[in-house]
Length: 135
Image (cartoon, rainbow, N blue to C red; front, side, top):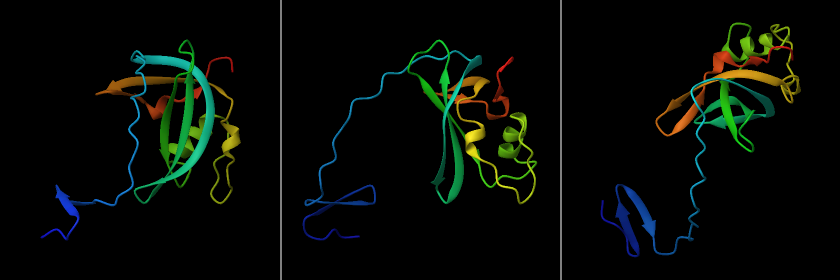
């Protein structure tokens, strides 16, 4: 491919001289979270589309790590045997075909979950997210 005037080609991408500038931000400070079980709270539940798939993102705070949040993503749609359906069932919801579930059922709940470090980030082991003992 021959670039048109005022364009450069970098690894198959066109970059025009008239492109808007994109600011560069400092990296967020990394906080070490040990592998294993943790307690915390569900801070938010959001539904997002990524790469043509819909996910429910559960944002969790980690007890003992002030200001630190991590996310666990659950695929949608919900059915009784899906990972998302089993999550709601662990929190006491009746997961019944055709009956919608409210994300508010999870928000604000005290929870227990396991994490594992993967390369440069911490991953929540999704199947371990459940109500904290005594909650």
